[in-house]
Image 1 (tube, rainbow, N blue to C red):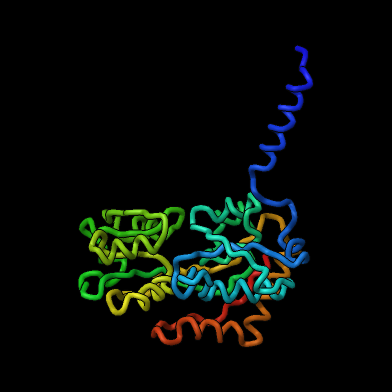
Image 2 (cartoon, rainbow, N blue to C red; image 1 turned 30 degrees about the horizontal axis):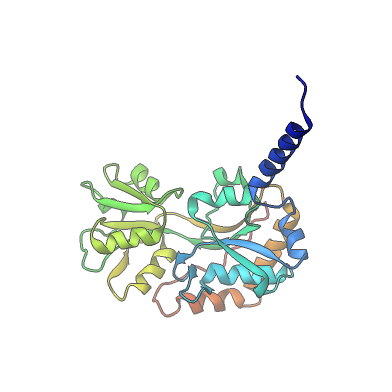
Length: 275
């Protein structure tokens, strides 16, 4: 079949459009940082961890860690672009190059390491439960029986862990964000919210006494910084930055600043795993 010049032009334009759909760059995170700019995925709705404030600024321990690491990579705070990274989208955002790093209460797991790489851990959390202040019958995962309504987030593992290991008859409801779960809890639409204890502590502190964290942590969640798979050079630099942050006292200072007034007892600084 003969292809006309116009058709060849159209095919070429279509190919260029498809190539641009990924929205990312082929440069490594380290290369982009060397150019003085970087895009970091964080949560926008987790007080104390990663929060977009009403004035457009960002706060939380993950934000503190992200800024410190970026600084060690040579990027000034004003040249960091923060992009919202919901739990279910974190691997895709890294794989597509839409973000260079993810610092978003991102637990290191074997299944995730098949898709992306991790630096860290920089914090170790544990799964907990958030309930209304006047609730007395939910005291831990074992008490989530009788069809109680439990909320967690799509793409996360906490709710499935409860169903598998503690209460098979719990009524699981999955929302896009934990802030939506917290609103459902306040309204009485669900009985409890489950995720990492440090995240729940931030919501409890923001609730003006309406909510509380109950029970002891019943999992181990190692927070890592996500990178594109195979980017060992940048991962080594990020690990160096995490170790420097812990060693020079910035890590503890920032963690105390975010949670010191909440009554929540934070974990000690973990050792970096250079796998």
